[in-house]
Image 1 (cartoon, rainbow, N blue to C red):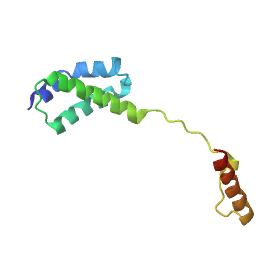
Image 2: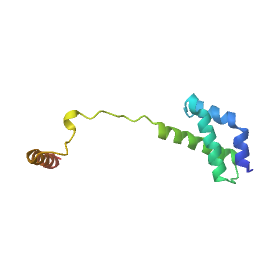
Image 3: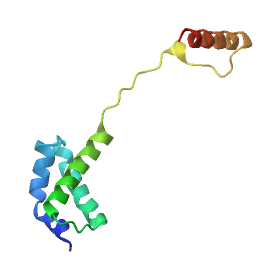
Image 4: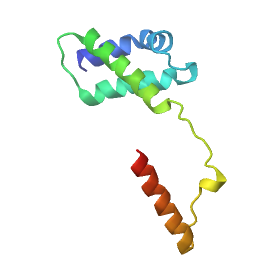
Length: 107
């Protein structure tokens, strides 16, 4: 077993504490993110000079990944009159094209 993985295993409680207190990972997700750190280190099989520094970077990276994929995204319903009907009549299609041309000309 490499030194970084051993360090990570020995410091799992500290990783969970850092993830929760410093990096804002939700209590329900701390264990999952901490295990993600172990898996990342296991897959990378690093041999750095400073296991603690590598472990710290792995913890920070896992926390950033957690927040990146759990960021709330704003979803707004589309207004009913903004929905385009694929079966538009020719007059409406011409009006739409003219409206788009005017908008581009004003921009």
